[in-house]
Amino acid sequence: MNETAKQASEPVKSRASDISDLLRDEILLGQYRPGERLPSERDLAARFQVNRGAVREAIKTLAELGIVQVLPGGVRISPIEQASLSVLGPLLDLKDQARPTLISELVAVFGALLALSSRLALARATPEEKDRLLTILSPETANSGHANTPATYEQPLAQFAAALIDINNNLVLRLIGNGLRAQMMGRIDRNEPSPVDARGLLHNMANAIEADNPARLAFVISEHFDHLSATLAAGEAPQMNPNASHRTTQHA
Image (tube, rainbow, N blue to C red; front, side, top):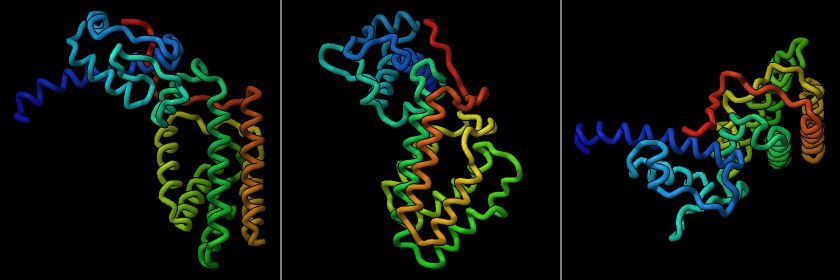
């Protein structure tokens, strides 16, 4: 592509991105029901005052997210359950407008993945690898002080999860973890008081590793995150980061 053509394509891509973001949020907020047809390319082009090429690019992005299907009879809205992991971040940006239980569900899934990864890793870890895990969980490394917020144990848990992935050498777990981390980045304020004992989790995890008990380690992690998930579902959710991007869903 020559420079002139490249410059001409950039405004189209920019408009298409804005359109797809707005339509995505409207879909996630339920302004279109599953199975309903999206307005035609002509109608969308008129609404956003763009050419149909920008609309096609926007629809392509929505299809890649898994929230619409491009069919011979038009573009149909897909159930949110069929969407890709990439919609998690936009859902978090919408706070509880689209799915009030999202934070508690996210915590439950993270806990289940961490528990599984921990059980598999401890069962195969060498003595040196176990020492590495204990070092990560030690109070000196965690540097928890007197705080009891998600930030208190975010860093040691992130280091612990990374160490587990290295021990397991499991590509699937690594990719899932990368996807969750990318969607959560900067979207949750972790400085709010934690409704459960964050420091106690690290201590109990270390005890299970010292006892060389994979099942106990998985149980400790599952119990903690199940409790946290239930507490959040009851209405004690952490605050969303006010600096996270949050786009308006008003029609242009």
